[in-house]
Image 1: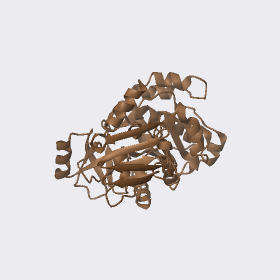
Image 2: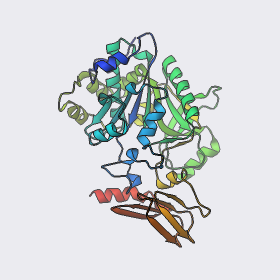
Image 3: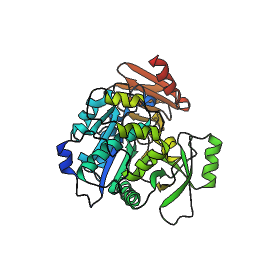
Length: 380
């Protein structure tokens, strides 16, 4: 039986979408790309007007959101990929992803973290499948951030297929974990059961970004993985969990017909609690599973994490978008927006240098978290 949550919401249902839906006796998959972040740690390349997900930060000719869309398109039809973003970025999303229908760009009036973002997408999906007569139990959903890097795409596709099959066949919510390679304090950790013979393991608990000593203990103990922020579940299961654990949010999206009337989404978000899907749902849900993965993942959260995916010279210097001349300088990350511009370094070690037309960042690699603090100060 289809879950009641969000089932009555009529939102962004266009005739072309209805024609693309398959018969109700088959599984239907959707993908939700979360693209509302500001990318503050990549200042000055990333700005409020054009955050990280819209940058070709790796020099591939494709922005991060385009790479995410391309990757998901191997599993989900472009007509069934939704992008949830801030109202500021509607035109930017449309420019980067011209093949998705305009009604698939869902714009939030303000930042309310990931739970409202996902509830909004669920409302749209629920209305569309209800119109097509598809049971919510037969609808799989992939939720993914817009600004992550995945290098081993065939392995990613395999894991996604495995997770979708599992999500449809039982009541578990599934998160993709990353096998840790170091005691990193920048990621959340997932403790899972190592007794399971399957790739899909039961989650015991989530731990937010730990102190370094705790992260070291996790690696020694084993049975932990990093939380990638990529989720797979059925529409029925995630809807039921919203009803149980975020009932006010569930009721808000269930009771409002988001028909496109001006101000409706603004009013809805004004009533929404700002809360993450991890804290609001996953840490409370009765059945959560994890697949510990190795598909070349990085969240590209800092300049030094980006450097791991760029060419490095014999002195450990990494550069992109500039003509670097380095003398007696080692282990620097140098990024620019003009490949014809020469940046010369002498006697500089373990620094981040980022050059743009209107700003220059010079910061020790050991203190790169300061960049986010700086952006907060500049905003004031």
